Image 1 (spheres, rainbow, N blue to C red):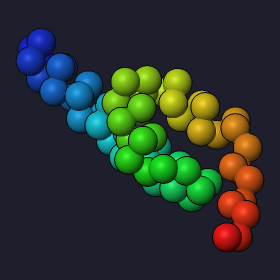
Image 2 (cartoon, rainbow, N blue to C red):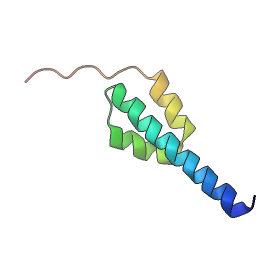
Image 3 (spheres, rainbow, N blue to C red):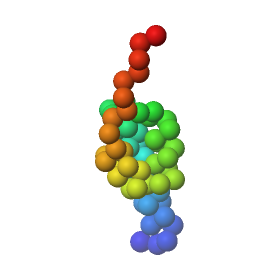
Length: 62
């Protein structure tokens, strides 16, 4: 396995984690796109943040 293959594997894993985090964030009532982008930058740290934070409060009716 050469360096390019390792880099690709790492990028695929990081991207997959970002997709999983987006779905997890949506299930907790958060923005899917925002957490996908945050996950691309933060990776596993974003997963931890999503899991340990509470759900946002419901919006008041207008």
